[in-house]
Amino acid sequence: MREPAQRVVGLSYGGESGRVLPRLVLKGSGPAAGDIRNAFVRRHGVHRVVRDDALVDKLFRLPTDAEISPDLYRLVALLLVHVFAVEAHLRSNRDA
Image 1 (cartoon, helix red, strand yellow):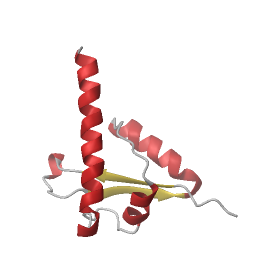
Image 2 (tube, rainbow, N blue to C red):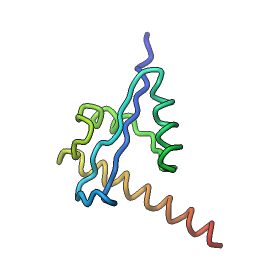
Image 3 (spheres, rainbow, N blue to C red):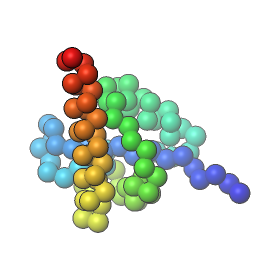
């Protein structure tokens, strides 16, 4: 039985773009997926990496630079709540 190919996706939300919905800004697959993720993290100083295979399956179907579709709003909202909670926790530890 073959292992499924490794895949990576990246979302951008708000910020300078002024977009209301998160959009897919990065995707890659195969052996280079880890390298793509690591290069993106280094280049953009992003430390918010979440592993959710079911969400990756759905997001990977979107074209790059596409806003998420309505059927993904709930999943991405849960992901964002998690990311914001982790960021708040890290900030409070850093400020303490």
